[in-house]
Image 1 (cartoon, rainbow, N blue to C red):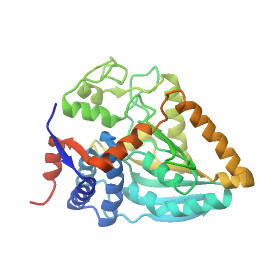
Image 2: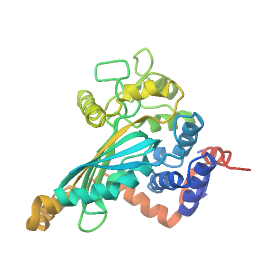
Image 3: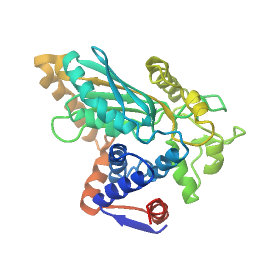
Image 4: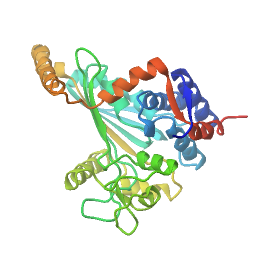
Length: 338
């Protein structure tokens, strides 16, 4: 087992902010990014935790990201919010646009937020979970870089194209799922490469189109969709809805925009928010109770709800802190002023 370093959650947040500010990001961006990195590390989502700080700093150094960008929030239509991230990272743009999205959803029942011109590296579940805290149902989706081959193909077209959903529950945390429409998140393959571990068959193919267990060959080839043609269709839907529909780049266009420097993907994000109270009126409580019967039927037979593992990890981390590989800790320390 590789050597690890124990950190408190306060240390996770402090180190994250310090690394980001040392990397040139404004305090506002550093706070927003550190929030999602903290959440990922706390919930033992290692590929979306402190490891992501390395890519954020590298993206700034490559000159693609504006580390001081101030998002522009626009009241675009009765049920539409547009946020121009101005080529900064997405977490701050989401934070600035969310209050207006919530306000519109409560007024109209359904509202959308389109974030444009953002560099995106983070998981989507912190965003939909935050919206659910306001009592709203949330759906989010975004493309990435074209790393993923369509079903039956050998060349990348799609991004990992995650989709996330949150349903607020009357007692306890919301029902949340967040998954890439690729077979696995790209960060998981990158972590396997860093650790020198093979990847399972079915995650990716090499540059010749052959199945591979080698993480380096996978990163140079193409990732695969989950569920074959079903994941491929969902990926295409996300490309369309979070690309042309909101006037932003597809994954292939994002890859071309990168010009080979290896920065975080630059594109858009679409977030939908639904207010059950507007949809259901006085009957909202009884219909929410019907949803709880479904959840009870799932866990009552020993099955797990999506995000249950994360919530359990969250409680462990609150009690005991977290552990990260020493190699990652050393890499982060190297980014801090001496």
